[in-house]
Image 1 (cartoon, helix red, strand yellow):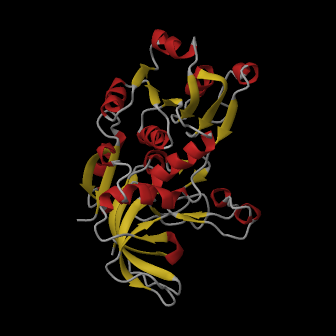
Image 2 (tube, helix red, strand yellow):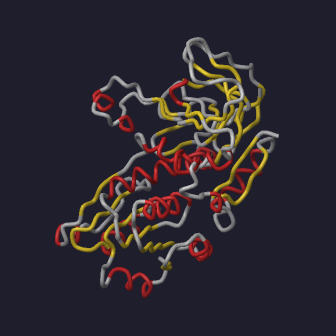
Image 3 (cartoon, helix red, strand yellow):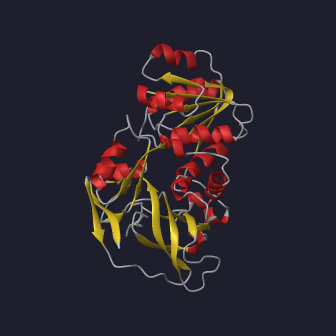
Length: 343
């Protein structure tokens, strides 16, 4: 089998590996499609994502769909040839957070394609791979596996929307027009928001946001444009999806009194942010991390046609030349979500 393995910054290779055998309760899968995520790009550029530092080779990828090749002993409900969505999260199910139902905050999480623990937890960018049966959702045979590979980032957005509270009739601002920002806009709309605004520093990203259905866009590099957002705040909820400290400042300033700001993007350490309006407007600031049962809901909405995320896919590339795929994903002026597959 072949696997896309990161060895360090700008060192990603396609390597041959032995075909894995499923143990009891596991399933061997054939990879279908996968999306290159921002964390994959960070590993490629820097060899780390925040405090998750590469200390050895690791298979990349946590957004993917697959086909069942061989169910292991004791696995029921799956047969060879079944299409599946695969959650990359393997919570321990026994820590305090898991027992509270907060599996996304598991203190002993094994998350595919993450260097947070060592030995690292290999990701899904392999032509054949083994996962726990509990990670798989069986799909109807008509399911579009390329589309289903978008379920993981959409689950992140659905969880963020749930953390925002009731969005029925809301005016929502999303800061950051990347793929997670676009997913948050889609999730907010699905949750009942009636007007979606979006800000970004990149004109190409804002033009793309318009094409994807955002109602109003704002150039974050233009003080006059941003004043239109902050001088008379009109946003019931704001999703900060850029991970930039100035954007969080904008998010707080654009929120109505008693509005909600949901921090989705990772902020840099010691980010300077003016929190005065958090107090004087009684704004609720909430963090959001990964997802709980929203993954299954994301798959359902995609399969049943309630959302169409395919316009966010800007390229579909073979993984036999990983440098080219990552170079395309790094070009934010031209790419939103780059999908990969094995030839």
